[in-house]
Amino acid sequence: MPSLKDLKNKIASVKNTRKITKAMQMVSAAKLRRAQDAAEAARPYAERMNAVMGSLASSVGASASAPRLLAGTGSDKVHLLVVMTSERGLCGGFNSTIVRLARARAQELMAQGKTVKILTVGKKGREQLRRDYADKMVGHVDMGEVKRVGYVNAQGIARDILARFAAGECDVVTLFYNRFQSVIAQIPTALQVIPAKYEGATASAVYDYEPGEEAILADLLPRGVATQVFTALLENGASEQGARMSAMDNATRNAGEMITKYTTIYNRSRQAAITKELIEIISGAEAL
Amino acid sequence: MAGTLQFDLVSPERRLASIAATEVQIPGAEGDMTAMEGHAPGITTLRPGVLRATSAAGVKSFVVSGGFAEITATSISVLAEQAVPLEEMTAAIMDQMVADATLAAAVNPDKDATDKVVADLLAMRAAAGQ
Image (cartoon, rainbow over all chains, first blue to last red; front, side, top):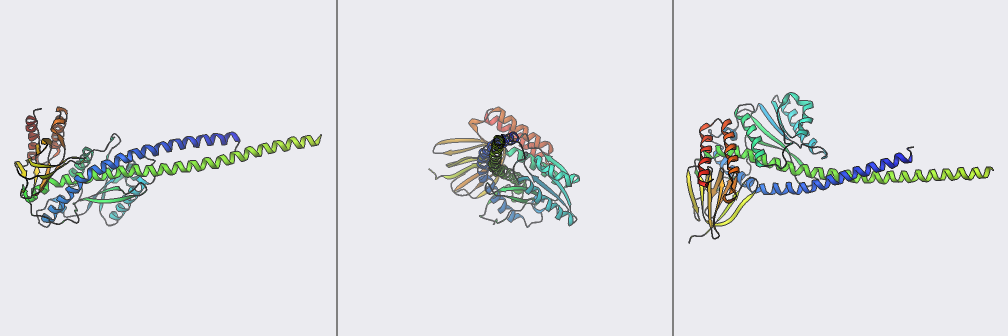
């Protein structure tokens, strides 16, 4: 049986924890709104980009001279998995779900005899993947210094991916990130960026292309990769804040429950102590 | 007076303009061109340069660092890699753009194309009077 003083200390400590988790929840809520705004602002560009790329790709895609970024290298031996996670913890299952998806994919690919390479974005994913796949890691992008995710960051990552692709280090590139659906639901997603897949596109109106279709496509494909990386980063940012918000909400609630439980125990033991003292006094008086 | 066409200028981070313009002059990869209502539909890539949109409210200029434009008879959407309203342009941003392009030029195997981008940027700086 813990002493009254121990219980009191315990309650004070849990109360402090609750204050912290509550504050973190509120900070995440504010950050989430900002992240959602950023994702919202980026949408017109990405949508238009995908539409144009889609119609270009469907009209050029079939020809033998299509750019390698679209058509692929002709083999699918080496897969580069770009795993995007957060820099900080305390966000529930956010990082684990992404890593689990990436790990499942890596296992599947290796079972098929393919080579897997992993590029991590964000510290948490690297820490988790390093345990099993230390020899597969080819690079890491540190986002710790980045306060607000900008297109520049996406360009940097895209440039890295494209350089590896151009050097023949990989044939297929897939992004792993969490797609933001709501505060309580983030969907781990695998998106193949190279060779590019633009779905649901139809060769729309007859356009004049200046320069030619293939020249435009060759120019746009690297930008398309950067755009997709950027979208993924933003989605991931919003998801991270959403996940942290609900994780911290849970933690706050748990702390509240714990405080109630400990307060009950504390009161009971206090009463028990008083009762015991009374019995002692009464029985002492009776003995006289 | 010709009719208007819907002009949208978006960068990856935000939408910079969405106005009804009477004419839009864009720095196409193969030369400047002006789009007005009824222009034949087309897609063109952009070189770094100054984009001018004329509307009832006057002329608005933007510095764009490349991207592409989609033109239809009734609208023009410009998707710029980076775009800054001309009046907000400073020498610092300009230098940053040149530095970025030079950095990209260093790793890109297609030397001619990237050198051209840097040259275009420098020409643009001269045009913008910075």
